[in-house]
Length: 621
Image (cartoon, rainbow, N blue to C red):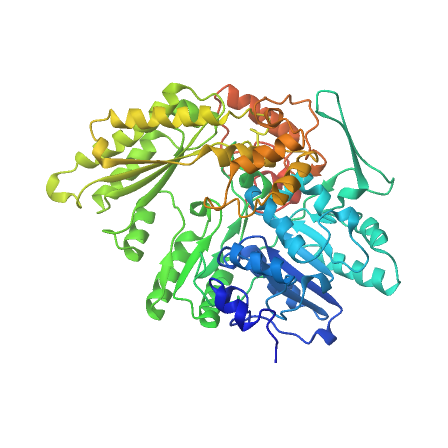
């Protein structure tokens, strides 16, 4: 019988003890004497968030199918338990075995968002693993990072032994087999890392050297050994129908953020929005076969007992077999008494028909993401959505019985003017007017339009990676312009406005496009108490400002300047398939307000066609 890592005394004094006891339905238990590789898979946030992450579920299932490998899970202890663990010197532990992470062979950390960076240091610290990779001893786990934020790993380079670039279903087994042979031969940690650098997609920061120009830009980024590759190429799964997918995912004891069966229908996106990192990173688009999805959905519902299923992908409306899949799920879920949660779909006749079958129209709202308030700015960002299409979709929805609409926009986009900001209010007003054009007898209550604005963050591997951002006060002023313009509209009572705090945007921008020097500030902020920065109640910008000052980091350098396209960027050594030449061309087209057709309409020569497959015109020629 397992012995829990936390005593009854500790469990009784903390919030949600079920976060830490393991033993959930479908959790994998193995005899540790029968395995030679132990892998701790970590999501550096609270249990409820981490348990909702599909990527970890896929890798957990994949690893545990392998003979001799036991993959367990670990999440960030909430501040109440964090305090107790430090006071009582309790080492961080895995949920399945309840044994210390420090005793594992690997600690794999998925890095989904920049605001979790200090939580990564919390994980290492509580695990009693040296925070700095250079200080780790032979008996400590190999710390590996994966996920979207690893496409600029440099701010975290000092804390990780290696990074995995790409989708985990590809070369992880090569890495584990190398570890086995290295261990069997009695070779050192350093020798393992050197050999690992030759595996496609593996980046070992300690084997690369960075030099800087006097102005702070990068002068050179080079491997320190001849046999270490200059470029690290992302790894992709091309056959999405015959790869790993969890048929029996772990069912959490407490309600998770995504407490449902998640069915991933495709990866990638054909749209090419110039601000969107995911749309560039995951090219080309690859679909799962609809028959495989039907079988998987039925099996997962049976194995989990979940009462809801949702579809997962970027731009789900572009999945070629969506109509067949959704109609099957409607029938299957109705038979089982299961709810369907639909992703954001393009508002057309098919989508409205489907949503009317699976939603309570009186309670639900429809979502549009115009991103920008004017057509000019939508052309700049390559958002393939016109005002006419938005109004037509809203009109169809209103005529179909909906009365609630959510609109999502970004402020601070490149080339944005005051007219673009005010255009947000004008578009909301036009939608409200479209509702009141309907005869009163045919309306479903009062029109409710919720406008939400976030602030643009320039991300690596997007055409906007060279764009400047703005000071915090500037973002506040932009939101005030939108708010004031909404108040001047005839239908202002039908429009509600929400906007995000700008402090997080500024920090996210620094961390997203930072270089290795930013790592010193991350460590300083952590030592001063920064954890759970993604949670507003724990985020304190003054702690970060103090850390930047103490480490001499000029934050204006990272966010307030437009970068030259000839400059060496911290992430230039990574090859994502989409070429830098394509990004530069798209950046120039954005400034010229020119639109690029989506990948199904016309190939724009981004470079991803070399992967040969998926929904990509170039790859099929």
